[in-house]
Amino acid sequence: MKFLQFLLLFVSTLFVACAGSRDSSSESAAGDMADAPCTECGTQGEIELKITDEKFYREWNPVAFSRIDSNAVVGVFPALKVTANRPEECKMCHSFSADALDFDLARVEDSLFVQAFPKMTRELMLPGMRVPEADSAYMDTLSAKLLKMKFVEGKRLDDVTPWEERDGVEQTIARQLPFELSDLLNKIASRYGLRYLTIPLLMQVTMDPDLGKKGGFKWQIVWSMWDARYGELVCLAYSKFTAATTTRVAPEKEWATPFASRLSRMFSLDVAKFENH
Image 1 (tube, rainbow, N blue to C red):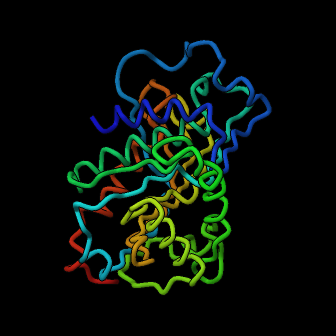
Image 2 (image 1 turned 120 degrees about the vertical axis):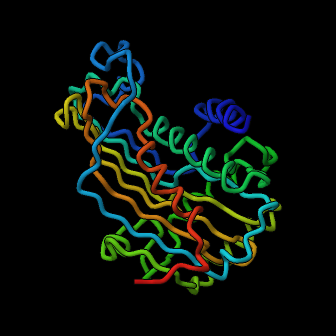
């Protein structure tokens, strides 16, 4: 089972220096993973959330999408920049951390990819994993290099401004990438025998115990897929929303679940028949 394999590999990486940026921010962040088991989270039933204040942007490159090779190898990056915010007093935050968020996103992404591209081989782009040990130093710097790359309007890849300004827009567009970014993607593809890369560029989640019946959170992400061989963006999704509980089961896990339906649209849409509005 693909996700089980990912689980085993991911857990081992918790003790490896992270290639990207991880920030678990709170005045008592040191206790995130050490808190006593939650007595406030509820033990039965599913976490049910109401989504409000939603903003989104989605784009597809119709040329890159039309030539997707479903038998290719895709390199799977962890989120390049993760910020996990929680208040000092938060009884439902015992399992909440930057690494937990990244792992939960990986769970969602892996499941959707298996459905959309069942023949694709997924390789983890993590130090000390499939790459030779000698390459770990290169992998350690790769996420930092990507974050510094300029993309739309000369802004860095982790800058959400271009997508916030296009709130509510879905479009097909073939972007001309800056040479430095295109060249780096191509070098990654050549070095590791990859065709595609999936890269969550930024993920920011803030827990709020006062939302809904049993708390909630504010979510923001920029997720991307690239054809590394051709140096092109295949598709990109920006998603921002507030998720509040409607039942008395706290959101102490599965934070990425509401994003799943939003990400699945990136693969389920027939781009050939899509009309820009």
